[in-house]
Length: 312
Image (tube, rainbow, N blue to C red; front, side, top):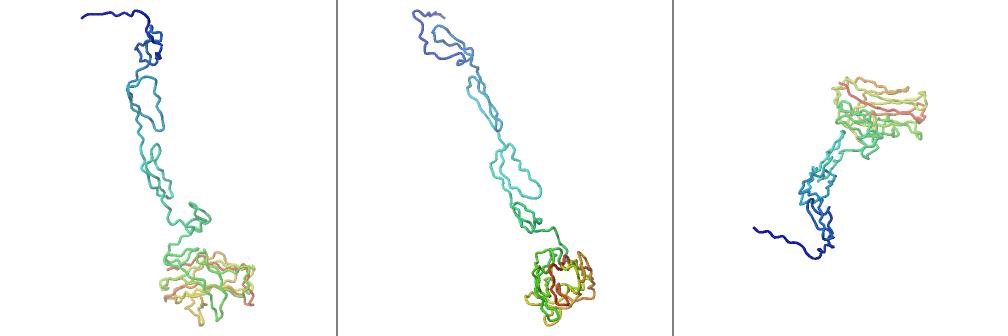
């Protein structure tokens, strides 16, 4: 094998257009500088073809150097969406560090009405609530503080006829917490009354007693010549606007008992013996107030019934 040495003679090489510097050339490689006579050695680091994992919402800093390829990978857990059933307990939707590919849907709160929300309160923008917290699941309790027992309901007001006389109508609202006879400030009638009827027939032979929880208050502070009465009647069912009474032409049935108020009575529960009454019939509550001298049923006077219960 032969060898030949070539030497440059004459003028220098024109390298004035060279722009590379040491950092532009791979480490260990030589290059010709602009003077055409001098060589330099590169310092650029060879980084090869790296593979990098990028964190969620993160970044990767690549050092300077020469790259022949490479790959950046990011693995993000996915969240396909979820339906959340709202309730009394908190619900955690696990979305942390995940990519959501679906929606989160909150189910509607069913039957959310003021009637099932605590009185005066709001739930999810619904309110104010009217429920006073009373529950009645006793089939032998027709009425308890505005709540009717299973199968029970009431109709009213019904005007009352007593001993041939029709009484002026009082007020009764079946949604109230009490069965109420009330004389408002503008009331000027000598006598006023109100009646209601429960729409479930009673077999009285199954019961020994009837319990009544009632209040009575005389707005004048005295009971002089003032009489306020509650009649409990069992009879045939009538849902009518005309007057009803337990005696006379508009009679509906048999008087079980009469409660006569002649003094203030607050939150008093009284039990009445009904064991001698064995027929079937519908329960009527008839309330009326009057004065023996035909004066008015004074403003502020009232009768309130909070509870009616049948006892076996």
